Image (cartoon, rainbow, N blue to C red; front, side):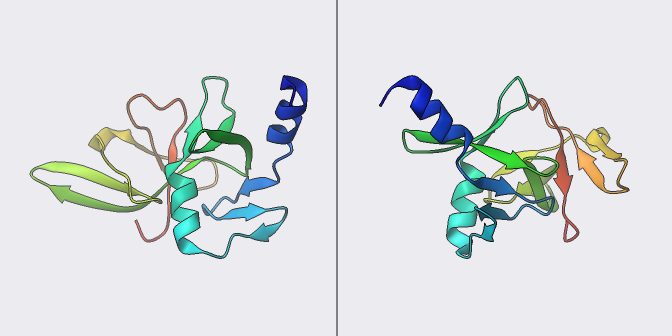
Amino acid sequence: MDEAALEALRRNSGLSLSDEGVFSFHGSEVPNPRVQALFHRGLAVRDDGEVTLSIGGKWAYVAVATVARFVSGLAARAGQLEARFLGDVIRAVAPDAFAIGPDDRVYAWFDGDPVPAKLLRPA
């Protein structure tokens, strides 16, 4: 397959991510929680802000409603604050990394990420 055709397939993947962190494929929610978690672990935000999903050697673009990363829980461990993301990735977070967004939701900025993560209500 030529590069232009492959790029068109990637851009028209039908994958989307809601503002609550739920993946859909062509408008239908992906029903399997393990697939949802796998998709969250495969997300990447490019320097230009575009969001991609990679599984193995394959990847596609994802349309996102707001942000690509979601924090499902916070915990203090060994004197450090940790954030658990959807997909079960855990990262340290600085206490001053939090702010209220224009939608009155809490967001956190993590070192190395160009965009913030949204804290879900359970967090």
